[in-house]
Image (cartoon, rainbow, N blue to C red; front, top):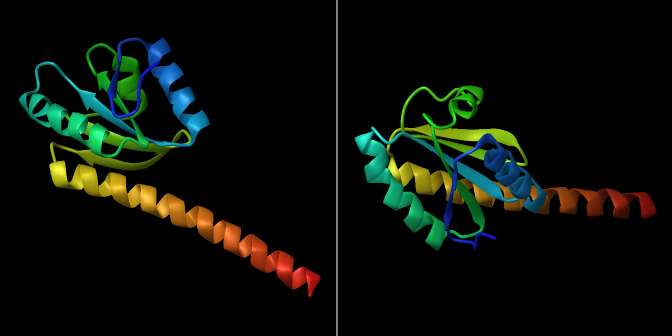
Length: 135
């Protein structure tokens, strides 16, 4: 079992699917780092993702080497490295192309806030409708 605050490397399609399923079940935001061993910018940004995983552990962080898992990279239309995709419950909600440290962190924080307030808004609306029907 992988602990929170770690970047999980997926080396097989099976492990990729397993990690996605676990993340979907947990309802966590998933940040996927598509990387390549030959990309210098990928090597530069990798420690930043590890740092973010420690600072923001309520997110699932996955790493996929595009040369190892070509079909996964193609499935998500990855054309440049590094590419980061943000998934929520299996759906693509955002994408960052390039080693943009600040943007990477800002989008993680923003996406988590938006999701939190969406839940609160739905709960508020449900309560409002229920109270209106009772009155």
